[in-house]
Image (tube, rainbow, N blue to C red; front, side, top):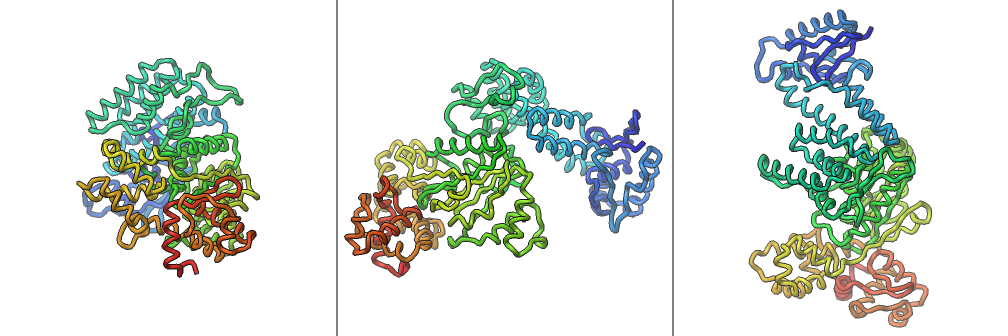
Length: 624
């Protein structure tokens, strides 16, 4: 009978009904290290560090050879051929499978659970994986290096699987059965906030609201006393959701397939993954998370963010591919909206959340073959294995993501031809696309949900400023703050730049700053001496992508009054251009996000853009 190695607890060799704990010796340290890196190469230098730490043995390689020889003898005597430990140039490797090593079996069960699809089956497999643990990891292995470096990683793997299993059981309505388990986990891991969130949810769903809030105050006291910090955003959102009654209380268990899982009610403030039972929030970021940092102070888009998140959650639940396009004028905050949604639904896409910028720093579109190469690299293919043919890369990319649940954020797309080769095409994944244009061709050929965002209303603009300058200051100088939002035309980019510039001038009066900014807004809504981040640069990028007729018309529109509404006939009469040509150029400007639509055939120019066109009229070279 083949012996089984056990790592998830005291390190043991098991043969049938008998288990043999390893003695606390240096050969046992060698075996534990090889098991932790089963089927991998482990060099002599690393083994020496693991076995002896900072000590300097006289002849470590000779000692390692002796230990390995003794291990082979022990393994052979217990039913495992000694050749399972391979001697390689400069080190060793131990061969193992999920049938012979409990750590590999644990990982196999977790992976199968993740790919299973059915929540009950996923919960069962996770329970089977979790049951493999027998106590403190590597309890009988005398190696400071392994205890310091390897045990925390093993512990984290086990805890993440347990968190996921509890999330699933909460979704299945098993909250009453979870309370006792979560009480024990919060006592054992008092600083692990996720278990406290789950405990609060389980208590509240069981009709024990006061106990749920008491649990929040308990963890708040623990964090303040032990670490000097406040609870994280997840716990704070959970407390707020309980206070507002936004968590649905359920009295059933193991819902039938057609019945929706319990969820938080009310408006979307953080998306379904932040508090919903199947979304463990930020902890659910996959092993291949490539998202940029979440934008701070995200305001004013809660309703649209909630709708997009709901659609992505629905698609993830029923296994359909979802493509969502977010369009808006330059500086409207398309990327911030997409990132906010991506972080909210990250837990629904455990195989990764990938970000791809589709333009260069200069604003030029990147070719699809280059973008596919980057995606294949993220998916795990080595650069040397990439073919140069675009069709070949497309096929390889779609094959690699076919069975994965991936969220792909494609930022600043120029047209459908750039986006289409990057779409996974298989169910289970989702794509968020931001663009200054409408991507009409993409919508015509694919199932795409499109959203358009415009400037922020005044109150949302003030909220953004309050987050950057302080609420007290904005309320105290409200008239100046309102004037600032008007100068910035409600564009989040302009508001953030203005707030950043004002914050860098301590002691200045906000009214004086607004007057200074109003004198030359395009030049002063910029960061740095040679700014890459500026409102003007955002307009320039859009203008550089226009055709010659649209560029000429944009320059001619400098004669219109700011905020005035006009139609193709007005502009055709003024410029002496034929009506069909004028209509076509106006549509191109609208499609590029440079005009705002008023009905089917009327347009208006944003205030800041109007200022920009007047500059172009003085210096028309860039549009010639």
